[in-house]
Length: 338
Ligand SMILES: *[C@@H]1O[C@H](CO)[C@@H](O)[C@H](O)[C@H]1NC(C)=O
Ligand SMILES: *[C@@H]1O[C@H](CO)[C@@H](O)[C@H](O)[C@H]1NC(C)=O
Ligand SMILES: *[C@@H]1O[C@H](CO)[C@@H](O)[C@H](O)[C@H]1NC(C)=O
Image 1 (cartoon, protein in one colour):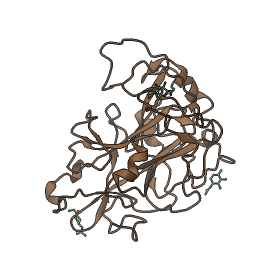
Image 2 (cartoon, protein in one colour):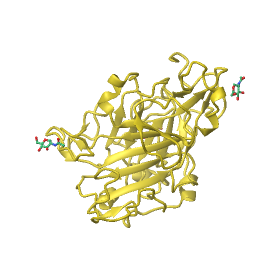
Image 3 (cartoon, helix red, strand yellow):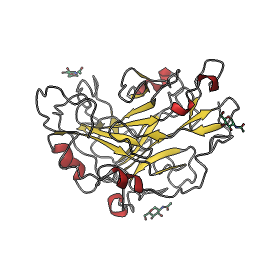
């Protein structure tokens, strides 16, 4: 597999694993089993990847994700987790909207929509991956971000939620907290990094965030220690979601007042409200086994499937809505448009 930052000189071998995998689209729809379980349709549109046992409730008490799934859109064949984010819409000068598709990362060019998912023990560019982490337990789920944030100040608690304006598929810097204000030739990459410390007890919490925490001081990247309230180091889960904005990059179609034309499906044009959702569903202890292996991206203990197999796993929309045409209103947003 092609990997952009292959080490030129391997200074030391990894002692633990870093996973990077493509995951195709499972479905694009208004469904949110984590934040608004049972509500069909949910308030805003999501792009969802992972196992096909996805449904509106999927409560851990009666929903065994790996047992109930028969396929997954992720490269790791044992990963039936579900992962999702909101989606971007382009607003044309005539006031109509079009959903922006996602595309696969370098190395996953044939992938249909979706995103790239990482599980890391140390930061991405660290080929040694030395830190030991505890994999998530069955029933674990979490959320990160604040969909009501519209200023840098409000988005500050989530400093690891960023955007990269892709000049080409290998651009990784700079990252901004706001949506790029210029056309991005290869797309807009949304980076979602989850907290890396867990209280060790609760699989979820009322706001889906209090059971996890950022390091007590320093950062994940600086290997800051976990706080005593959340002492268990968990892998850093990270999404890279590449929105294929290239078809909308004609400056003549952009607003004449200098603003940018993309809007999140929950009505945010600033970008500060970006957020991500995770419902764990790896089979048995397959994630822990991979995390314990010394490997960087190419991990022998990770059972993989082909891009064709990833693409062939889909589910029907629970609430049937047109996600592909030009629309007068973003689904669910009639009252909240800014
Ligand atoms: C989701 O699946 C579970 C387990 O089969 C089932 O009990 C539940 O009713 C389903 N929820 C919905 C909303 O379909
Ligand atoms: C609005 O503009 C878009 C982009 O130019 C175009 O594709 C679409 O057909 C237009 N819709 C209407 C209703 O004029
Ligand atoms: C965090 O605090 C510990 C103990 O107070 C200290 O030893 C360590 O250097 C600090 N780490 C960072 C990254 O600031």
